[in-house]
Image (cartoon, rainbow, N blue to C red; front, side, top):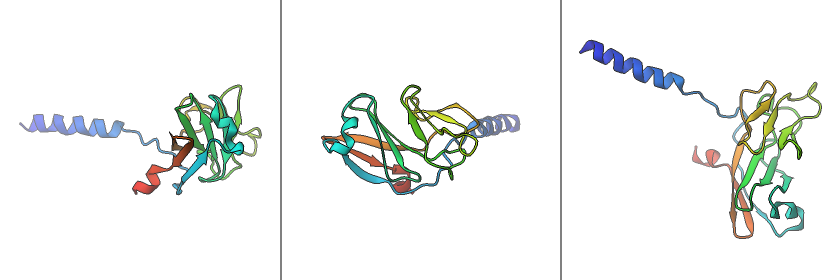
Length: 148
């Protein structure tokens, strides 16, 4: 009986120790706003592959239209060193990165792969916000911030 309990305890200990905490170290901030897609400032978001920067989040937010019904919203702060300038978008590689890696974050993050690290030393993906199309507007929110 004791052996059986020991195996059960070891099993659950193994399962729990295998859970890796992969949340971004970028601080939680309140994000809850709408982008009106018919506004000329956001015209690029009307087409798949269209993108823009908006203020908000910890270091600005990058919005991306994946397929006219799926939108991505990422904080432009580098999770590896969030106190640097905002990440910028490279349309050829579909990554957010810094051009000056000597002074800034050396990592590149894939916009199409949920903000995953494509290269560099970062251990964390980009901080992601929920972006949902509601009619002719896009609702961007940090649900984690409001759930706490």
